[in-house]
Figure 1 (cartoon, rainbow, N blue to C red):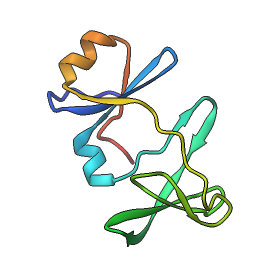
Figure 2 (figure 1 turned 120 degrees about the vertical axis):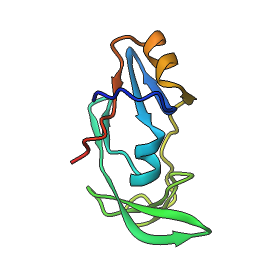
Figure 3 (figure 1 turned 90 degrees about the horizontal axis):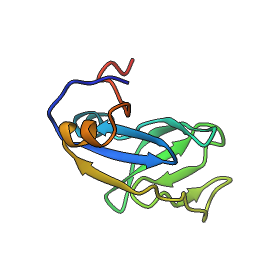
Figure 4 (figure 1 turned 90 degrees about the vertical axis):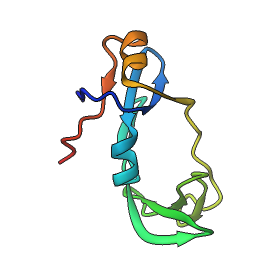
Length: 110
């Protein structure tokens, strides 16, 4: 997870780990899959919109969720919501100063 961009990114911090997700990648890919608290969050896009919002699916259960709210709309998690993680939009420099060993999602996303 290395990047050397001066562009802004979304920063999420969970416990002692800080991670940055460059906006350029988020805008292009729409979803970032990651592991939090030992749990893999692995989503895909359905290619559908609902109320002008992307509908994503959980690859483990194939439940569909609204991207913006994280609320389940079809499948095992229908009606359940994902817990939001606090985040901030900061520059690369601000992130590096605050978290010198923080992880940054690479542009080499596979």
